Length: 543
Image (cartoon, rainbow, N blue to C red):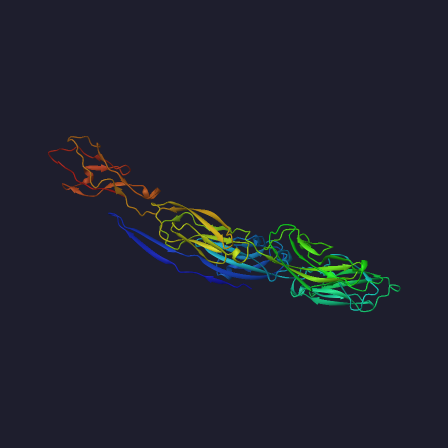
């Protein structure tokens, strides 16, 4: 289903009259401002290449001719590789296999966005495609075996933390339940973290007897809620030991720490601490991470002897804003205890805004009305909060301004009429600055050319000309040369000279003199007789 929002302004028609001597010029133009809309689609992951995402032409109210003539195309974002716009049919189709887990990981809902741009007039339409999950992943344990060494004197109710399974799917398709294989000694206890994730403990329900059963083999099964249901399992080997009857106990059930992103390797975060009532080797503890994602192992380290946790890799707020890790203390008799560690990451301003010019109309006619859209600019900062808030600016001495449209989009527009004869080209520098401390900025320069219209009349270099000629001249004799100039450019500045149609002695002026239309040189058409005509007055024109 597509949801569409559309905004469009009206079209204004205007006319300018200009009358230099004998000319009347008419100009009619239509100002069509920038149009914006938003649509949203929802499709399942793993659709085959070429599968239909949605009918863009229908949902945006555009015909196929408009898509072709407007050079409709997809712009911005790495995610555009997943979708293809077929302008001949006005539809969006899948262009590459979409794996929801690869695209979004644990984040729900999962979507990617891009923009469709059209020109003549400019239109920008934002498209969001939501990817729904299918149950294509089974729960997986990191290891294929869990081993315990448990004293036969372990107290009933003692808990033994089990490895958690991971399921890349989300919601009902994700991990839902654990099952422990039938046995005489242990039952399964399932617990929930504040974020809704589950972890399990194997709880001793009947006293162990090493002499009867020195080894136990169990199986932990993790199942999801998909249809059909998927599952994964891990083997549990229990070796029964003698006489270690006290498990370690952490002094906190939850530890909290914070770390600045880009912290140096070796930065200490926190030290966890557990105690064991046993003495000797049964009271010696070894600390480790009990339940940690694979990618976190390269970021943090725990000292097995002291429990100190330090940074050993790159901490990037833009990738992970919080880490939740379970730490384990294990004594020499095999008894274990776990506690939860929450590490919050503090953002620093380490990303400058990125500027991307989506579209630029150059050249622009000098008669373009104020508020004409010249360019569409996309600006984004990977940081968060104030560090990711961006403002765009340009040189205030130019007749342009920059205004925000959609989120992260800016329109560069004209503030006044342009005059090519005053300035024919602009180098407009767009500066994007974030609100971090210290602030980071980036810039890009747009080269805008101004195209000419015929808005200047030709002007003679003198108001009047005077010369003389001897009588009995030869026809064709060059008498004088007049010169005019035009401030316009190219074809608009090419001049043609001609004589105003007047009568002298009942005869047209053209029977006395002629003018070269290209260079303004005036020639005698006949031989003059002083006794018949002593002076000629006429008006040369240019056009």
